Image 1 (cartoon, one colour):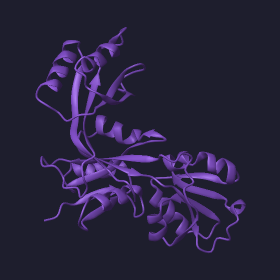
Image 2 (image 1 turned 60 degrees about the vertical axis):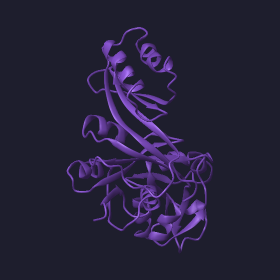
Image 3 (image 1 turned 45 degrees about the horizontal axis):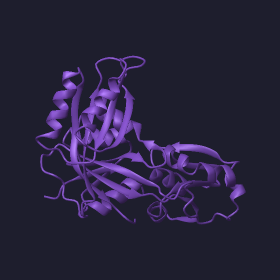
Length: 285
C-alpha cells in the first residue's frame, strides 16, 4: 500500500508543490494548519507529514519548530528545499488597475516576502493573513470584491485565477525548507537525488552563565564539524531561558556525535537529536 502523505493545504500551497515533486502516488491529504498535520502523523492517521520549516527571506517558521519541540516530538526524516516564486493573483474579471485592489490575502510569510512590492504598488490595500497561500487563492476565487492573493502558479491554476504580476517577492534567491516527518523507522522514498546530508540537535543550557554558548560551539569546532544554522528559541519556562537548534552539515556517526553529546552533558546541557536526514534540493517548480 502506498504511503499516505499529509501537507499544509488546501490545494495550491507551496507545501503541496513540494509533496507533488518529491512523492509518487495520489494518497495525499491536506490539512488546514501545521499542528493538525503534525498531530495526524503522531496519531498514525497518516504515514508522512510535510510542513514548512524555514524561508530564506523570513526565517524560521516558528510554529513548526515550537510545535515539534513543545507539543509533539517527531523525528525529521528528510528535508526538501523548494524555490519560491510569489505572484499577484486575481479573478479573471479583474480590470488590471492595481489601485482598485482593496485587500491582499496570503500567509504572513508570503506577505512579508513581498513587502516592498506591496508598499510601492498596493499601498491602499488592507492585508489579511491566511493559514496558507492556497487558502488565500481560494478566498479570492469565491469573492466578488476587488481583492487579490499572493501565491504560486499552482494556486492560480487550481482556483481559476489570473496572474496579474509575476515574481513580486523582494529578493530573487527565495527558497523554503520543508521538513518531512514520520514515525516509521524506514526513510521515505523521495523521487529526487540527495543534495546533502544534515543532523539537527536541540540543546538546552543548564543556566545563563558567561561563556556557555562558546563552550557549546567549541565542542563542534575542535572536531571540525561545520554548523549551517544556530537558532535560539524560548523554553517557555521564563524570561531569558532559551534552547538552541543547531544544524550540522553531516550525517550522524558513531564517533563525533556521541563525543559532542558526552562533552555537552558534562557541562550540564541537555542534548536531543531531532534527526539525521538527506536534503533534497529542487531546482525548479
